[in-house]
Length: 540
Image (tube, rainbow, N blue to C red; front, side, top):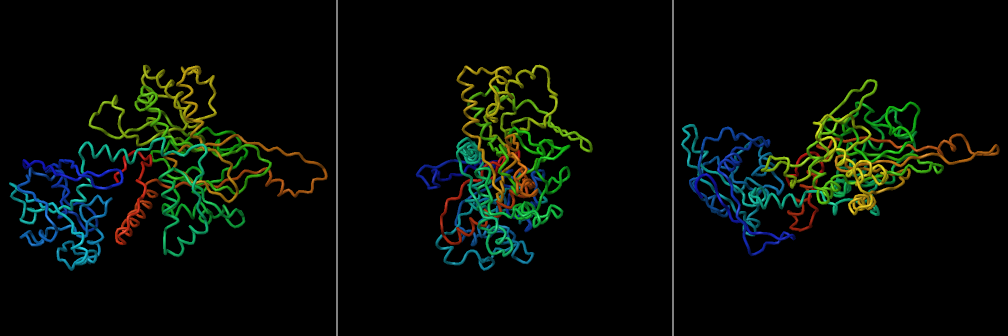
């Protein structure tokens, strides 16, 4: 310790979260500790001490002690001791649940001030705290600012040495091993059970499991959903199953300006969107021309006539494919990181454009764009809704070559002839790798009436096979007009949710699940929270 930084020893843990005999060293800067002092966190969660207020305060002394020892020390009456210890995914160095339960009183250092730790719990599993005494030359500092107490588990969770950041990336980055495959059966959930849970407010088990499936594998299917259009009238969007589910999963629908909060996906004359035709849809993201692309997309199949040929739904994990592209063709990967594409939606009443690269990486200590060994935090891919490139001329040819290769990995309908014209070599091994990836990782299924396909629009691309009707009629055909229409109809009802609201819903439920398991002294492995593709790394 030199006053400007502190090096702390932590026991290392293996993949099963079991402590090993070796130790790891993590450095914490004085500025970092000073800015995150628990004494200056408001009970609402707002930080009251900011980095710009740091005035060179140094660490005079530091000691790791049990909570009971620190309580006997002559600290300031306003020094917050983080009891109960903050949950594992808490950004704040103390539990706000405790503070919010104190009738507006922020300071609570008495043993009886919390219901979390009884005497037995303290003796059995007493928390260890880092107690820091500050050496300050700031005349404005008071005695209340001389001490800070940090929960050691919290510090361990937020350590930022190189190895810790790398291990965090290993847990959250999407890889092919995380992706759905062609032969995967998506997890299925029961619509009536989800609705019943939301109405009774007793449990959220089905909702939690659904969100966990979506944020782990990228997609899930909800079954046993009503299909009677007389009941789920499109005249009242709030009564449709996708709207009800959007409210349960994210607080409501989003991005309803262009097509409505709830939209009808069926072939119609003079369609405003290619989705409202019977044409094939190449794998893409919806509304990629928005600054904030939708999070989840819900597609409720209400009709899929027996006379319809084709129309299968398609999914492929774009973030996993980008990871594979970096492994197989790093030069093409780097091009798609460096070159911004133009995403566009222009028609009568609409004029939207947005430029962003196809692949977005997390920030790193090397600001050079040649550094591609960083976490993939977003993929932007929407061929039907892309406009003219606006990049320097020397980047155009490499861009189209890289684009062609990545499209080959994402679209298993791409022809070899197109690949060759864009610089690919169908005779080479690389071509086989690219095309085989799309073959192995493209999920394709014909939805059934009553099924809702829910997927993360930020991470997964979706598409559709071309469809047409194949039916012959005779004069003695006894089917009614309605029956014939049903045979010829493919009708889906859709909605979007905001990615931030949806992720918030899941993380709150995940935190509650962890706290319940901890209070019951049960250890159940929950899958790590994977990157959701919203342009930032996950802070677990």
